[in-house]
Image 1 (cartoon, one colour):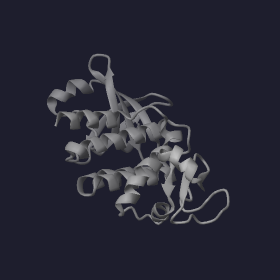
Image 2 (cartoon, rainbow, N blue to C red; image 1 turned 30 degrees about the horizontal axis):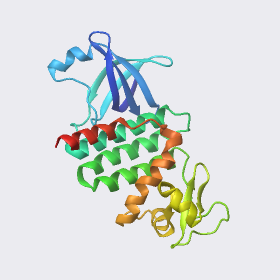
Image 3 (cartoon, rainbow, N blue to C red; image 1 turned 30 degrees about the vertical axis):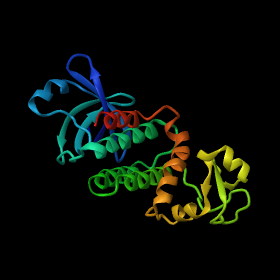
Length: 238
């Protein structure tokens, strides 16, 4: 039997009373467990919940594991409204990243995940999410020199436009390219701020949302993020 700290990223029903649960752990990264009888325990207030740290005990040689028992190590984070959907977004992105074939620094990513969840309770949501995405890229081996033109090795110029090229980085583009590809066009000044880790400028934060979405695609795939769609529906109903 193996013991690990863990968070629930996703779960779905399995047979009548059980669930198939994706856990994020610091030592093993993503593990999938069969939690037998756990849905029966929901009526007793013992349901496995997201945004709660657990200590789990499981066994299994490879692939699908069996969850033997679990103990809550913290109260569920009090996320509501936009912060709740932001938490779902973080869970979905982490789950997709861990399912990818990229190398994962699980222990460091686990710490970053915990930090992101805590930030959603107290910080500017957009700032918390963008900071998490930058950290995710770094720990998935996909960090970039944001303030350097990969073709020339020159620092980007503050008043010039740059395009993003997957697995290569930033490179200066013409005004014609910028006009035809506005979603892949970024100001040098904002790239300097990003490289310095300074996301406090509104224009930089807005730019990062577009840029990091492009940078994350090779890791998390091209399918729409379900949490984004849920947030749109939630805001439409408000």
